[in-house]
Length: 390
Image 1: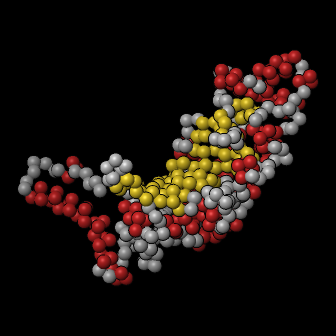
Image 2 (image 1 turned 135 degrees about the vertical axis):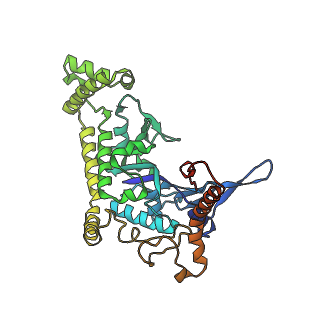
Image 3 (image 1 turned 45 degrees about the horizontal axis):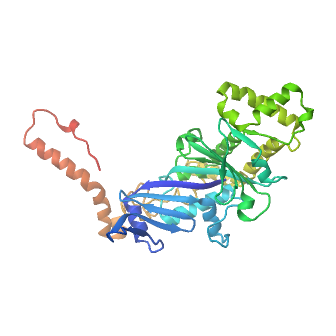
């Protein structure tokens, strides 16, 4: 159900670990005129994902999780660009996030989502191209065409999200695969779902809320059908001819759109020969339920863990959320005593003490500076006017 994502996390430790890891080949740009090497940003390709590291230690990972997971499983095309025409279940998504988090050494509970694309591939009993060509409007917007060489489908873009409908079968040389997807370009659009971090995509209830949002967004479409207009009475024909013009939906007021959408939909459902709209709406709901069905066993596992350890509701609970990492160097310190935040000097020697000092020294130095100021004498308590910033 989840496809493209963009995640970001600001961490000097993670940025350093990625750059030094030989598994990733980070590229830097060169000024063509001066020959000067531009150190940042650094970029690396990891299967179907792109990793970018900025000078501010901001790490970005963007790309299709669906294509990424297919590549890991050995499913690809001749172009080696990744494919996403098959099903990507909730169980697949959870395994993908688990695998990615371990390979990139990142904590999914700290990786903030900045873009999320979610949707379904359905196999309708009709030609997907014929279907999307009969879409008249989305709210007050006429459809835009997708595809550079030939139109694959249509899209609509609002302030916080985009909505696409296209023939994915044509994209990959397969038959009857219709793609319906929503892309949150601003996370404010997903505010009601409470999805903020990569780990939230492993919460079955939050994924179900996305499936509802997908269906609700689809319902905003104005869709025509093949109709014998001779069957319509005079008033129905007037409304039908008016509403099948996509430009009219840009001119209607909000109240007019509400009235005409209801009347037009009633006419199309009553006389339409293909019943594209209700059939596709049903296919979307069925596919969402099918993809999320694999989450039932995972949810049961979560409930067992909650009873045993009062842990949070996350399918990563058996492996990732039990792991703990040093806040300074990122080393796995899961085996240390509960509550440990840094490497144990007892386990890793004197080098481990640096991890604690790197974190505490700035605070201690700041405190010593205030104490030296106070020793010289002050007219009033100066502490409330100092703020420690790391």
